[in-house]
Length: 165
Image (cartoon, rainbow, N blue to C red; front, side, top):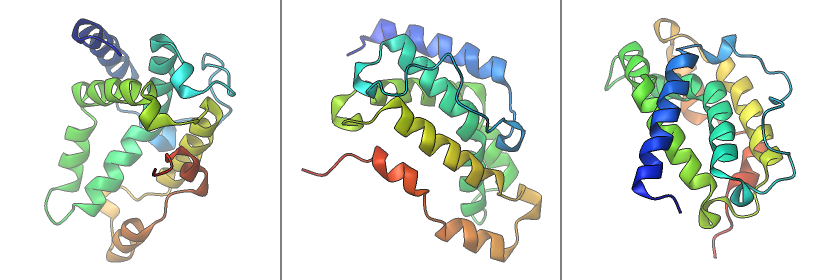
């Protein structure tokens, strides 16, 4: 388990990565094969080093974070301005904090079970494709809101859930 100073260092690295990545939308990201810098697909998440978990979480965040924020902005449109929500949600410090949380969850055996890097890659790419179909905040209709509200997660993401004892 990481100690606080390691968490601060990880946060600094994640923040620099989030800042460098900018606010590129999911639609602008490639859905090509996984980055060759990722750990081997057969590796279990709990067996990854801190650096490997950081690379995986950063790769995942680059593909999903904007779409995740947009989806929530659409769902919460009656409570918040959608675009303002997306802007706040995609701020580099917010992204960095979530990447750090991802690393900690990835390395926690109780949260990642027998999940492999390939399992995460499949779910990430399927979610990325799903998020790519979201309308921009200024184009949300009642039908689009309903679609987002009741959309199911891709089947590939079910593998990421740990069995309940």
